[in-house]
Length: 267
Length: 255
Image (cartoon, rainbow over all chains, first blue to last red; front, side, top):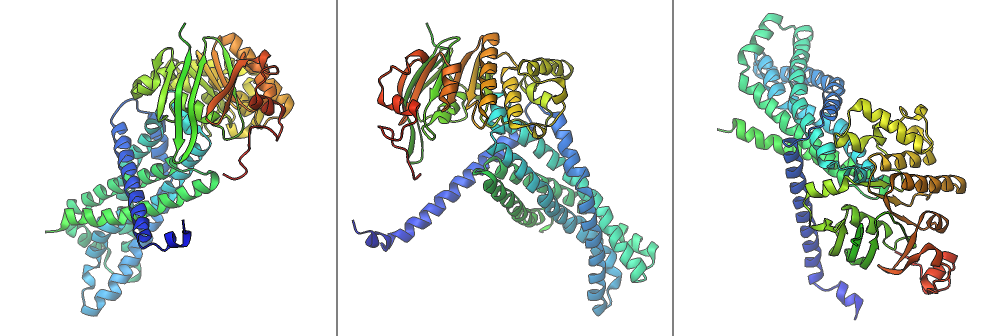
């Protein structure tokens, strides 16, 4: 058979598209099954409370500095940018409203989600990936322990519960950052700033942000677990899994942020 | 008499690469069988199929006469309760201290309290020649030989009826390899377990096995008692045990 003729065959291109499409479907199917399996194990005993607690501390407590710093600077920048923009049409008074709504609805959950994706998602993928390539996950199975229940479910539970807590704290810190800039740099009256912040804030603003945070927590831990669990090929495979976990979690956070905003706020 | 472990016509392929092409093997109660074969001949795949870590495309794998391939997850977990495995790289859990690694199965099955588990772990560590001084260390603090010993202690922690040894002496110096061989013989005698070992270390195979089965080209090419290995008159076995390059076994130089 003439190899050059087969390489140049016009259907060769279609074959390539088909292969990519089938690989995409296989990955989507595997991810869906992994998600359903992981989520279902969150509701079925046995629960490994020690591991859940350890993961909660890892996600909630140890992520607090990075999330807090992100939130305070986001609030400060937001106040400063709003002021320079709004001053053009004499609407400086709306800064407090803009800061609190932006932080609670969007920046709090999204920035915390992205920070946790970088810190926790990567660490989970690396840890579980290393366990995969060193046969520790096989060892779990032979010790009558379901790896989905032992490794995945505790991380999902911790992610879903702790990210809203983190975001709630980030909301407060972010608003405080805006307050610092507005009061000490831009010369706003502290009492008026706080009054405007409080009066324009509705419970639904905070709740929608916390719901987003729960979803983002699920996505970050799911991607960390999924890519770690399916890593192969030694150190390079673990590195690839770590990258994939962070990238896919970040993209999913931004996609779901739009979807959830559409659900909560679109009229 | 029903074999403790029985494989019948087991086939496994990874894409176009056929690894197992009809493996038949019986392991009797209390017997120690060693599967030998070159790298990439499917020894580990055979082991993983028996353990349920891989699913063969075809064939039957029975433990105590029950087909493990048709079991649901819960039944499979129960079947694994009577199995201990010593992994090639020890596969100890980095996040847990040595004693929790050893007692992991007992704690997971809620057979003991954490307090009792530590005592039991110390007993098992003593069996493999390790003292209380290592029990609170992290696996990363141990040498590879010590990690292997801890892996052995974990494999026998629940007094399993079946123990699998995956390349127990690979990566060890000859003296430590012999120490591990002696430990395997000692714990097998003490626990009275059925043992299935995969290795390419002939010295180890001769020492710990009652019977040897050679895997080649996806099938058992030869099987017989250890004493018959040298007089088997099997060209594949002969080439392998003498480590000759000329013979019917052609090593794949390219994957």
